[in-house]
Length: 337
Image (cartoon, rainbow, N blue to C red):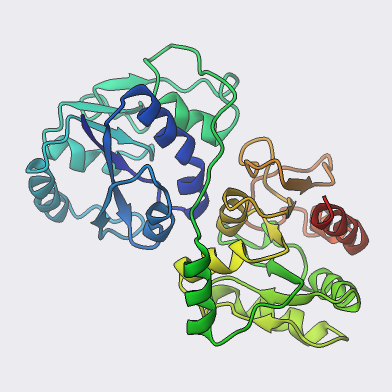
């Protein structure tokens, strides 16, 4: 059996899809599972043993490009895929497997995808409250109950890979390393304030921890704010200075990680690192870090989760009122567990 995954376009969603991949291998011994994925999520899939090969999906968010999708589909048609699992719910994400004449095309109905998807699941949000559960449901026959518990995501990072990453970045691994991931691609309503991160960094520095800031180039301004507001030795700002593969290896080397609800939060969880996950406008009931080493902090205010990019009430109390001392206590408890 040879099957193709049409992967999500977000790093965190891609991590949350791994329980599906594990279940598919359990269901079909000897399965070859390839993934059609955007290049910005490919490094995550490369660290999953369940994925044999990654096919580059060159399309930007929202880009239709029917002719280019058809060309890609004709190339995939030569691969002999018998099944395709279409994880995004958009119509355009189902086009390539359809154009490639893959016999079984499995996914949720989504954007009126009748015909494009021919093994259709109908989403019951109450029965499948978590995103990872919704992905994993695609391994079952439509309408069948989802076996629980789900397998945990687990990404690979070898000691050789970590050593190579540290050498390429010209940094030495400290004895006690805290990594902060202060960004969140979705918007500011998911970002714990820079002043709180700075207060936490000072408290950890007083306890002998080196603090590194990790994220994309878009996160560099908030990382600079954090560094500029610390009283102790400023944290090392690596935002925008690493590839995603290097970020995976750095997270794997951390004593513990503090993240907003973000893609790197799910990466840290899948690496098994002690993790403190701070939630504001989003819901830990929908996209929790799937790790027994993760602690979720949320004030659970009446106005949250609102799932907005910016606070609709203008105060961002769900994050502003989440005290750094509470996060510090969780960090120290997790690191000693």
